[in-house]
Image (cartoon, rainbow, N blue to C red):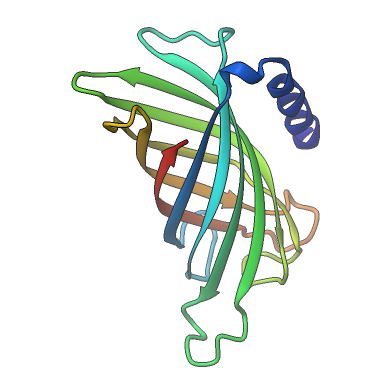
Length: 183
């Protein structure tokens, strides 16, 4: 299902190349012990995203966009700081919907929700397999710069679990601070 949603989003981006906005972002944060997670992991990464207007979604006063993101995440467990034997690298692909509410003086509030896939090069106390489903949600602000591009600052919640294919399936629940800029 997630693969079909990602594929459909990719095809819809090819249809309107003139309306695509690109952006880069950096992020850092940690996993939290909620919803059964037992391992606190610290990490950060970088990524790129593409957006296009979505006229099929309407909410009072908002502008909707379909978003595709690809990112890299490096994290490690707080339990093993001396040995760092469980450092992990992950590649994450997300498809999401972003709603933006413009405000005054070049500033806008936005919210995002979506799904994706995460591949990690190892396992952790809360992730028993390398491939995981990744629902997410975030909220943040866009600030228009003098060059006409937008700076973005957001808080993102990212859950990664194997959807019950391998037990136990606690999943990782990360909260990240993100900063990015359109180009």
